[in-house]
Every structure is written in C-alpha cells, then in structure tokens.
Length: 111
Image 1 (cartoon, rainbow, N blue to C red):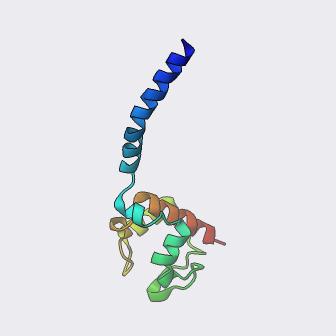
Image 2 (cartoon, rainbow, N blue to C red):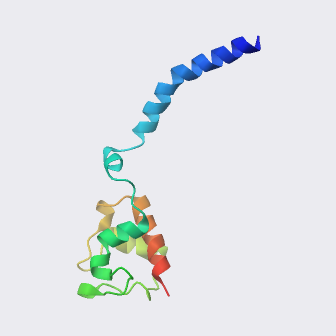
Image 3 (cartoon, one colour):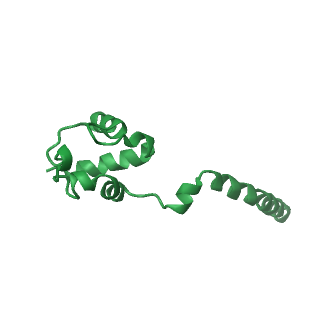
C-alpha cells in the first residue's frame, strides 16, 4: 500500500513539475534574465557615483555629500524617486527594491 501511495505521489509531482517551472519563470522579467540583479553598491556606482563619487563626497554639479547627509529613509526615497535639481528621477527607471538597496548602501557611506 505504501508503495502505491508513493508512486501516486511521484506521478503527481512529475505532472506538476512543468507547471512549477513555468510559474517560477513567470516571476522573472526578460530584463532580469538578461541583467542579473544589481546590488545597492553596484547600482550606486553605475547611476550615482558620477555626481556623488564612489565614496559619496564628490559633490559634482551641486550633488550632496552623502557621508554627512542627515536624510532619513523617507527623504532618501523621495529624493531618489523624484530627483532634485538636475538629479534625475530614478523612480521611473529603478524598481522599488533597487531604490531600497541603493538607500541601504548610501547609509553605509555615512561617517
């Protein structure tokens, strides 16, 4: 009896495996498949370091010194999402998760 239950379970699993794979692939957009998720640091270096510098102190074109910034999470989220001055609004170009990872990285730059 146990072997028949086991065999039925295996058959059910074999039928579900393609479905599990298809559903799992559905959670990955083609962009994610082509570009592995970037860490906060990598995103910062790619998108922000030109003005803020890799250590957060550069200040090019009036960019804030992020090492001494007192902005909290909400203010950082607003500023990154909507931009400030000539800073682009990254909310249209980065996902909420990406922006959160950049915020977490920015906080590591503080002294």
